[in-house]
Length: 386
Image (cartoon, rainbow, N blue to C red; front, top):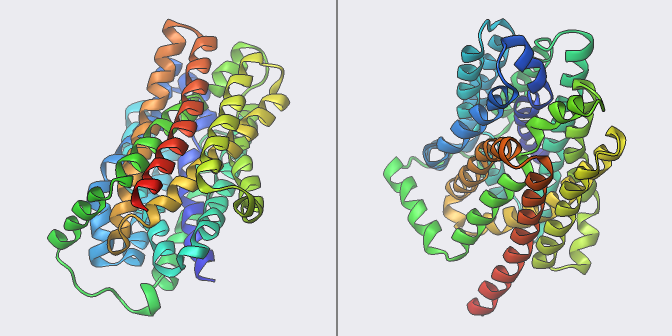
């Protein structure tokens, strides 16, 4: 039951995050801005999410992870309630910025709670289950937001998102006590910040955070442009874009279903290498533009490979500094969401200057390289620690 309420927080955060990706082309028309400018709604959420991590992680360790989750989800709910009423693109960016800052205290803190409450031998599966919930939220947000934009109004989905995050805020407030049902002992923020020193003294930390930064650039640069690519090639609109973007979540869920089987036969570093390779195939296959249903399958493959790589890194992060897990996962989220914020910017630059084909090739090859590179470097680190 504890894992359910923790996962509900991840589900709600994902709903808030991915609800705008299928709407980029719609927002460009609504506010009379270029598509590359409209795509900044994704970066405007991811960037403050990342920048808030150095503060939010130690706050969770010092004052209680459950309390921080409840506060952050409440603020996120208020931003979603306000989004349907915006009259200008700048107001939308501001609300997304505030929402991203608040959301920064959700998934990393929830992952730290899993680390606190699940022993090491159960942790990778528990994290995968949590991520599966978040990915279901991502699937629903992407697909339903696209459908709402096409058949009702693009603003309508944010009301549903506010209901979800509000319920999660109540769940965090009443059900997510600190480990063993006891509040954490008072701790000064200076002591909590000392956890960062402990984290970065571990040589694996730089490898964990560098890997997720590059991985996020490679994987998430494409998503805000899916709708425009479909429309430009007469393959669909917001509805089809929503379904295709949801594929990355479906791939992650499929991975979570078979992770227990995979870890019996593959080492963690093997999962990293295979994940980077499969994800790269999904990205590069997008070049064929064979139709939106096949594109959905390719993005699902990308999501499956991403799940293999990302879940393996998350498990490594959970053991970097057991007494500063919120800080460790917040540093992880900082790196990951900085990559997510920069990904659409780099992808848009590539589209404008070298075209879709070369841009997708670069991102696909980058993902393959980071998966194989992480596998090699983590293997070397493990041998050196023996």
